[in-house]
Length: 72
Image (tube, rainbow, N blue to C red; front, side, top):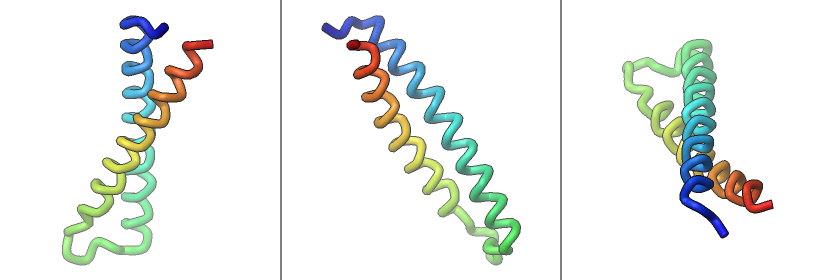
């Protein structure tokens, strides 16, 4: 049975992993945008959108993965 403590730990761990992976992905994409000069009109907001989607996806995956690992 899942306790509140396990849910809280899973939430904190998955949030930390999500923030780290989103920041890393944002750094990599902004570096690619700068290298290939893809920001002509100073409107490369798609980088932030993709980093946000990556953060949400990584959070969901890592949360369920940590819940499964804590059950065993």
